Image 1 (tube, rainbow, N blue to C red):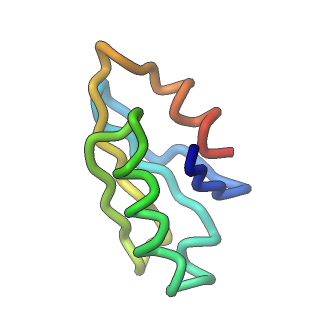
Image 2 (image 1 turned 45 degrees about the horizontal axis):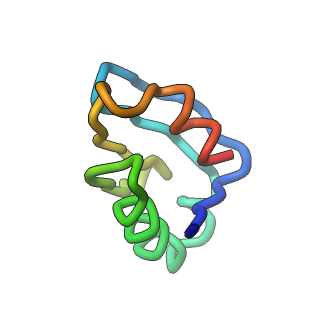
Length: 77
């Protein structure tokens, strides 16, 4: 299983099916952003992932009937 570890992160916004988190690693390591988005999108938990370079955040889109927000967070840290 491919794992995208973000280390320290904070939840910026959450509604069922969409989670926006901020991670310092996304801002500090610009080359890592594309790889991270690909890993997240390849996950069975996430249907789409978009990174935001300026803010160091990533928006995750998922099916709330299949996965809970807490499961996504646990997978990321």
